[in-house]
Length: 345
Image 1 (cartoon, one colour):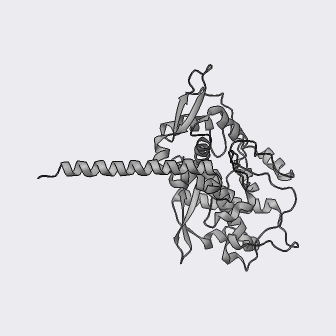
Image 2 (cartoon, one colour):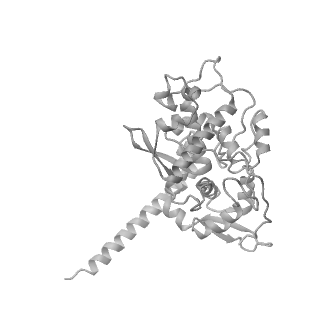
Image 3 (cartoon, helix red, strand yellow):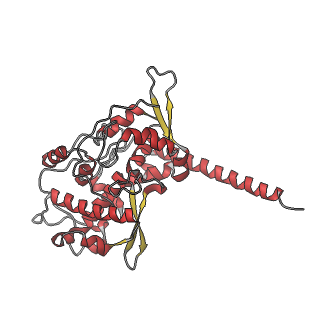
């Protein structure tokens, strides 16, 4: 197993944010990178960036910086630096009912500061995280009530950013339960059953988002990724081995021990490596609960594109679907034969 790094502890930042909501996530492409070839660039709103940051001082600095961080060099990254100037928001009150996909830009005279939106997204996310922990349904009316009245006409964009960030950071999705009452349930994304919450700890955070990120990296790197590449990519998010993160805890232990024990990951030593180097593959539980196609659809959706836009990854995902289908057919045939042989003549 990889050698444990020296443990460092950092102060918790302004972190308890995020969670999601339901809606047309393809409409989030305006806030996402469009480059996805062999190196998916996972990017999101400034709210998302602030959430993953584990240092409150750097969060404040990023709020005042202009432009965007150069994140596309990393194999898979999350976050987009917030803009320094006041950002015009999409959505008028008459458009809100139509949903995020129909939102248009507001007149240039109507502006809301970026940090205001970050705070509103944070409030909505905190409310939804509470609902997720309690396994309670929520409604649109409840979500609206978590937003300051004067900004409720911007609900669609706040809702959209909260959804996008929750999927990326926490791996939580929202499903509609009843369209009449507009009620929703919060679930882990991509069919995964793991969330990393600690029983009895009301402050623990869902960690499925980081798991999805690592599984995505493995898929895109040809079904196997080195430990060094994982830490290189995660460092962009402020996630380092041996350093407690405000959302993910101690990531080295989470990735190399917990997820290996949970069978989401398989860890093996690179043959003939001196000193010993390690690499990670999907474990049997990851294969059982999700698929490469589900991961590719998710990443393409976040990017605002189509899975077929990435032919090599799409071909690999189709091959994986076919293999799983053949395995299911084989299992069914074996069950039928066993059942037939046990029947009395």
